[in-house]
Amino acid sequence: MAAEAIYVHIPFCTHICYYCDFNKVFIKDQPVDDYIEALRREIADAFSNEADPSPIHSVYIGGGTPTALNVEQLERVVSSIKEFAPLDTTKELEFTVEVNPGEADREKFQIMKRAGVNRLSIGVQSFDNELLKKIGRAHSSDEAVQTVELAKSVGFDNISLDLMFGLPGQTLSVWKETIAKALSLHIPHFSAYSLKIEKKTRFYNWYQRGELQPLSEDLEADMYETLDHELTKAGYTAYEISNFARPGYESRHNKTYWKNDEYYGFGAGAHGYINSIRYANVGPVPHYIKAVNEERNPAREKHQVPVTEKMEEEMFMGLRMKAGVDKERFRRKYGRSCFDVFGSVIPELLNSGLLAETEQSIHLTEKGKLLGNEVFAKFLL
Ligand code: SF4
Image (cartoon, rainbow, N blue to C red; front, side, top):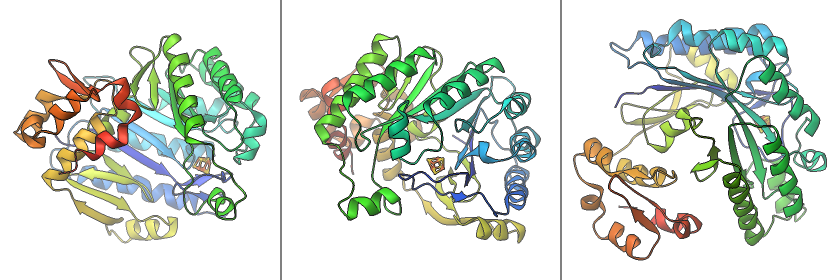
């Protein structure tokens, strides 16, 4: 299946959070306008060079922070999609932009709306001001609420909030308060991730020096269970391990990744997956601009994915979803049934109660969810 989704990376931030290892730079003194021109060119070239590109049904502009751009810059980025990409006109496009609380004013939201953006992913992380400071976020809980209200007043209803748990010093009761506050905003989608201490972050340095104590695995597991319980009670479905949605609000873009489908990645450090090749664009902003301006492919790493690896990924990624791996889809994609490919693995996992099977799919059970990594490891060919 050809790529039908686009990821666009904006690597600028007005503030660097202590836990973040994404490809990003502090925006001050950066060649932002040159970057946007290079980005537009990369997008335009990708589609003009393809003889018959598939219609695009999902666009995600992330970062970094897209809303760190000024109004005019943001407009140039969001408008590049309609200008250059062959959008699917038969279905509604899912067009998401990441937003940081306190950074998007009414004008920025209106620009996004006019350009066809119809979904926002707001990086709230926590509604506890003390914790927000501890993790290096630049906004307060009130600013997050105001950003949500402002987005709604401009007409956005498909909004997702990002939340984090397992943060240093976070207690179960603080986490419960964040969940309750999030639910009070009547948002249709939440993504919630536990903290991972990554290299090249302030948290990593503090951890190495013994100045940062990660939470226990048990407490993290309790936090996840609390989240799952509270959101399920409130009518959300955990359609993927870390993602919860009201009916009809599952993210189409995220499903591209979990279904192991191909997608374009544009921008510095962006990852993409096209024609069975996974690639990563060069990360530093000046290198990226130079490559595009010199008409060189900005992809720095390329990996031709062998079919065995594709089938493994299909299982790891697909089993993250509540719907699981669609058996017929797997067979159509690879010409073999997943039972045939993975031999005794699936029957054994079914017998041990970690997987369950329906007529259409195989999926993790509640027990399997808790031992997800153990299950995924079984699918290494
Ligand atoms: S978490 Fe987001 S806002 Fe914070 S530094 Fe990373 S990309 Fe920037």
